[in-house]
Length: 134
Image (cartoon, rainbow, N blue to C red; front, side, top):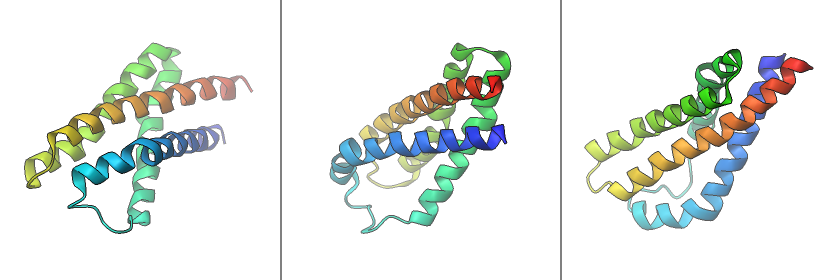
C-alpha cells in the first residue's frame, strides 16, 4: 500500500509541475520552435502512457533506492541523471533523425527533464520518509 501511495504522490507531483511548465512556459516556446511538427490536438493516450511509465521509472530506479540509502543527495543525483538520460533519448533521437529539429529544443528539454525529475524525486523522497514512519 505504501508503494502505491508513493506512486500516486509522484504522479500527482509530476503532473502538477509539468502542467505548469507546459501551460506557462512551453506552449509558446514549442509552438515557435516546432510549429511545423505539432499536432492540432495532443494524443492523450500516448501522453498518459508516458506519464505512467516515467513516474514508475522514477519510483523504481530513483526514489525507492534513494529511500533505502537514506540519502536525499543520492536521490537527487540519480533523479537528475534519470531525467537527463530519459529526455536525451527522445531529444537526441529527434535531433539525429528529424529534419529541422532545433538544437535549442534539445537543450531546453534536457534541462527540463533534469529539473523536473529532481523536483518530483525530492517530493517523493520526503513523502517516502513520512510513509515509512507512518
